[in-house]
Image 1 (tube, rainbow, N blue to C red):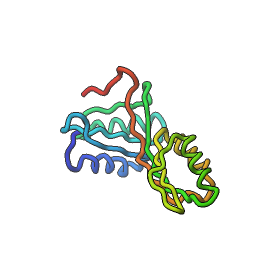
Image 2: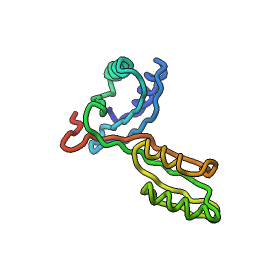
Image 3: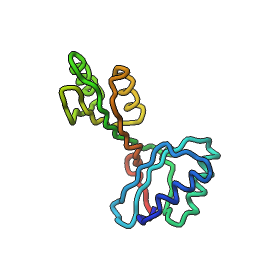
Image 4: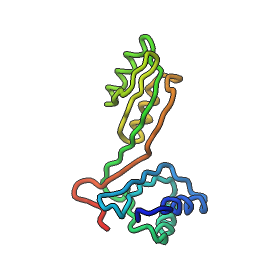
Length: 155
């Protein structure tokens, strides 16, 4: 989409006006500073996704739309999670972070803050593996994706 003020607002407005939910949204400038890449995750039937795509294509700021699910792609999300880590639990939390290839980025005498990157299901699995009540706070970026191999988004 064009990298200009109000473009994101118009996309979000399109979703809310039609009662569609945005599960996650990630937007940033591309290698071309006049364009931004938006990765948007929504849930719906094929008909709903087709309708959303048609409506998005009508927005003047939208340059091109692709459905990453239609080809091989890589998808990642980043999560920061603050967990209670005291006593014997400290070693268990550290072990879990290593198993999930997370990085402990902040340490206090009562908590760890862990950075994890992966698919949404991997991040969900980490949260399920941590003892209930140990999670103090989570922040997630939402999904970003790119085509595998030589497949690229060309405008």
